[in-house]
Image 1 (cartoon, one colour):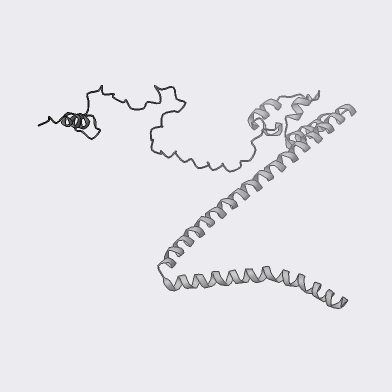
Image 2 (cartoon, rainbow, N blue to C red):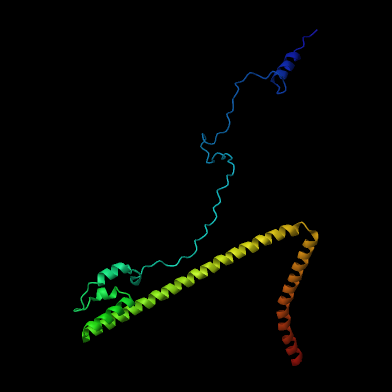
Length: 227
């Protein structure tokens, strides 16, 4: 009986086959996870997710109402009445006051001074010219001051009217919002509102179509006339 030499070959084939449970011993290679930072690849690591944080909303600040200009003019810087009286009570009328002192007076004070000067002595020609020049200057300053005062009063009056209109507008808007809330709870009211809106929309469409028809009619007439 001959020995069966095919058995070892079959066993070897089973051992070397990829389907065998006992694979040949070989060094196991451990694969590390891909790290784009450590590698020299041009790719950047995927950014981590960050939740959206809404920014604080800033509404535009309401501009302050216009203010009347507060410019100081020379005619507004009057010295108090008691100080002016003290300044001009001990004057002598032998010589004319300086132009600076005369220009600091009001129109009434200047007229009182001129009348007192005429009663005490005769005014020379040069003094008369100086007094006329100062008088014109004081009158111009007084008229300018009155004009600015009227403008300021008119401005304040308009500002009060504007504040009153704003208040009325706020009241109307508040009442309107209340009416809308009431109408939302009433089906009949909603139907009435829709009817009014539809009627207004049809009226606007008719007004937009009328100019077109008027423009077309003369063209048709002219064509028929040429034929």
